[in-house]
Structure formats: C-alpha cells, structure tokens
Image (cartoon, rainbow, N blue to C red; front, top):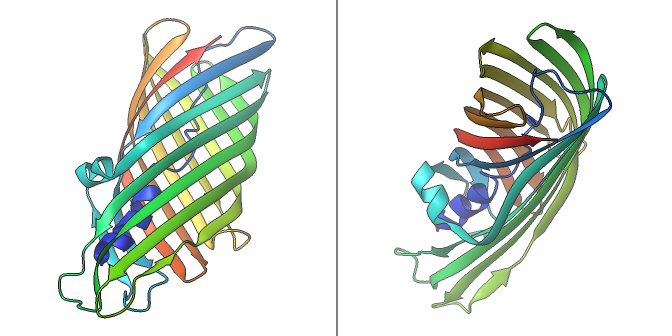
Length: 256
C-alpha cells in the first residue's frame, strides 16, 4: 500500500516552473523572447496521507530511477519569458501522468490495486530587474502558481468489495521570487533562483532553490545543468502532502 503514497508524491517530482529563461547576457533593444524546454528528475522524501483509512501516514523515499519508471504517457515541461527593458514576464507549463500498481501483501481485505495521478501545473511571474551591472543581473518577481492534481486509486476485491476514489486537488499559490545570474568567464555563467509561496492561500507553504551552471553555445542558445530542491506542504480531501523534492535538472534556452 505504500505505493499509493509514493505515487502521489512522484507526480509532484516534476511539477514546478523553470525560472531561468533569461540570463545575464546583454539582450538587444526592444522586446526579447526566450524558450526553455527542460527536464527535472527528482528524488522524493517526506510524508503522504491518502484517503484510504487502511493506509496510515507513510514516509516516502523515492530515488531518481523510481521517479522515471513511474512516468506514463505524455509529459511536457517548458518555460517562456518575454522581456522589455527592466520588465519581464515569465510563464511555465507542465503536464504529466504517472501510474503504478498497489501491492497489499499482508492485507486480505483487498487484493492489490492500481493508482494513476495526472498533474498539471503553471507559473506566471512578473519580473523587475533591480540590478544590471557588468556581468551581473538581479530580478525580483511576484506572481501565481496554479496546481491541479487528479488521483485515481483503486483497490481490488478481496474479503471486502473493491473500491475506487478519485479526488482532485486544485489550488493556486501566490509566489515571491528572486533570481540572480552572472557571467563567470568566456561562455560560462551561473544562475541562482529562489521563491517562497502558499502562505495558507493555496498550499500551507511552498519554497524552492535552484542553481545552475550555464554554457552559451551561441549568442542565442544556452545549455544549463544544475540542482534543485522544492518543498511543498498541502492538505485537502484527506490527501496530505508534506514532501521535499531534490534532484538534477537539465535545460536549454533559445533566445530570439
């Protein structure tokens, strides 16, 4: 039965914005755009409570390999940013589905089951560049991060009839953000991003930190490799999430 808890957490392991569409490289005059497809593969640790009474609070530990193996069907992750002078607008969208079997080896009331979770997430941030001197750039941001998580958990008939629950959690978090980018030497650079949100308006609390090393292949293409941690605490409809997500992230940014 622990698989049900792991499944709900795994769905969130890919589910937040990539806030690094632009770097500290000098942009041209006027309106500039950037697109950033990315992949974040996160391990998971924390605690999850499901709607099933026979499933108590579960400590969840999922490594990178388990996260990838639970992916099912179509998945998309991408960010876009528009910038005009010191002002920017960052948008992100992702959607994915994960599924897994539910095993009940010591429970005769049910004979296993299955689980399926579809997660859709978006982030919109307004940005203002407060510092832009030489190789350094610092942005302040504020916006919202809506979430939608649909979970389908089914237990197969054993001594008791089978049952299925399909709760949907939808909420929107206000988010405050800070982003710093710099050129180190030549084509190499680095970026650091952090945000905090929720404040009880959507989730109880969510925050994240992301750092990348950046390499400019050309003036319009940048590759990024880094590490990211995200914490989220949300409670609704008997499904409580209090988990941390950590893992490597890889992205490419195309500016035009």
